[in-house]
Length: 321
Length: 164
Length: 117
Image 1 (tube, helix red, strand yellow):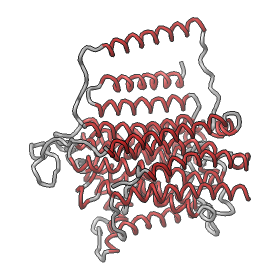
Image 2: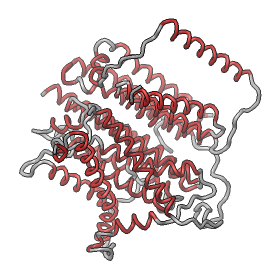
Image 3: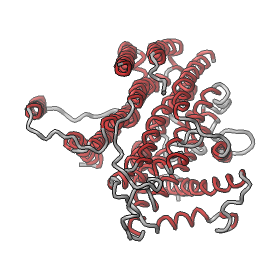
Image 4: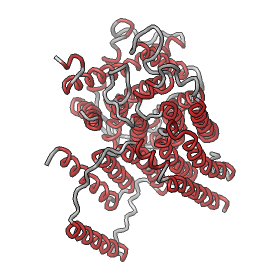
């Protein structure tokens, strides 16, 4: 009966199943949360008919999307049109693999976990880029172009600010990074790194104020304009799954993962993650969008020097300690 | 033949498939995608050789950087306009002769030197970092100069183009 | 089980999960295409020519500069693991590495290469 304790092969697959189920359900419920929170912020009601508080809305949405017609425009590239939506959902699933939730509760703990996390971000970028090219019309193409330069620009500060946490912990394994924060969360010595990382996650997940690849006002739907049925659903779910990954990684890298007073283990990680998820929604309905040149300026001339400065601080702190 | 060998052959084949797509496909966009397939297969092969750092570098720098760069170039020139050069050319003949020579030498080398398959040891980032900062320090610092030259060259080329 | 195998299995699961949904909805959805439905969405304007034309070279430049700094960032990852045990030596070695690239960064900035407009 080892597998009940998540030991052995069967136990591992059981753990994978449970984590993935919770993760994907959470991604679907983020859509619900976004609609409810935005409605609350704008003094509307939001979805409330399907189930209590509209809680069954995500289920209804997914079922509806599965049975909708898959429309491939005649200008579209059929192969890419098929390829892109799958990639955009596969990337967050790859990322969740290395995230530690509580002592012993993680799918895998490789000694290069941080690099794996960054690598999965660049795969997610391909979903967006290829999705835009696949559409074959102008709006998605523009969205895809913007997304390319945006992701390219923000990946650097993201990697270098995450490097600060790696220097502090002396390891690339995410479990080791959390363990190193037992006495002091990295947000204290690495406050700059935390800020830069948080900002870059907004850009990498295409959220406001950096949502230029899908700016509704100018590009209709951006890179996913030409998608329908569950292909569109995957773009939607992938975006929210990426939000969850981003919140989890900020909590793990800078806010001590499962460490915190009073409550045991996983509760803390969930609380921290929920806070950042709410922050994502809050920011979206509060701030206006950047202009594209401001966006590039901000990354190359503000965030990149700041992240390098943060790396220096990390090294100094490590040396003097 | 165990699972590891089978996987190695499968991803070696997809790497070659990707490389052929790069050269043969009339649509430059698909050539870039072929390159992506090739890089990804190489990353898996590095993983199978137990060198995760190299594999992740392959994903982050090559797939995440260089292929995006090529996609830019494809769009910079013209998307969706197959401009393949199907005429008879000496370049093709030259490449074919070079490829055949390389293949012959490789096979010859494998037979004569009786090469044995590599028994990979796990190369963690820590081991590579240790080497980079002690014995390989000169190469590590030199690489920063190489990158510096690359930045200056890129900026100078584009800026010269713009001032015209 | 080795961590690398776990990652491999997860790669397989991720791909299957991603494409199972896509294939499912292609199979289950109705297929009633008509000419209007298959036109690309161009805000009600009649679809024009293929999207073509040339891009500004600034996109290209951003990509090149990114590529170079990306290589720098990735080379710093193995370095980061040794600040703890090599102490001041590692700090100097890494500092010199970054300093050389900062020269390039300042040059690119001064030449206006990372100015967008």
